[in-house]
Image 1 (cartoon, helix red, strand yellow):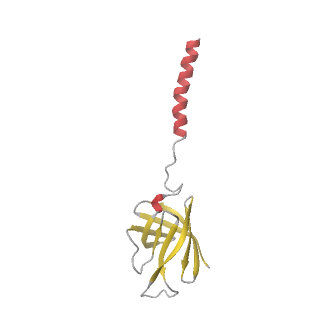
Image 2 (cartoon, one colour):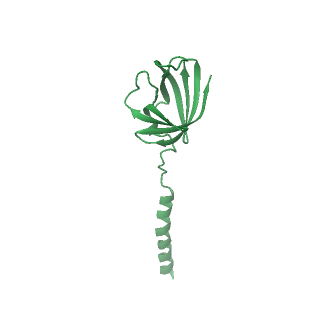
Image 3 (tube, rainbow, N blue to C red):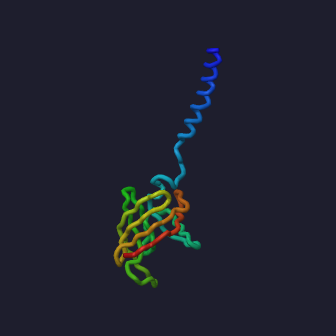
Length: 140
């Protein structure tokens, strides 16, 4: 009888321990925790309906829109340096901050007229592309 109990207990432990270990597996979905993939320089926004697709680059391009997310939660956004959007466009670099929360990025950054506050929903993110949907863009 004791032998049967010992066998049964061993059998249960053999099943339960692997199940417990699997249930504690780290969630590796790239949009959950702070995602280091976002850190870097993103340029050449392409617009499709409500989505904007950026390409990763080694540097911001002169007189073209781009944004750089730094590891210390600061950012630099290169954008128009005035209210006029008629070519030829000249740009400036505006400093700001960013916070990752779930799959959204909250950005607070200067612009020629004050401060802009963006909320971007990250739709897809990998080492080459960043696809976002703008939830809100407020200018103060």
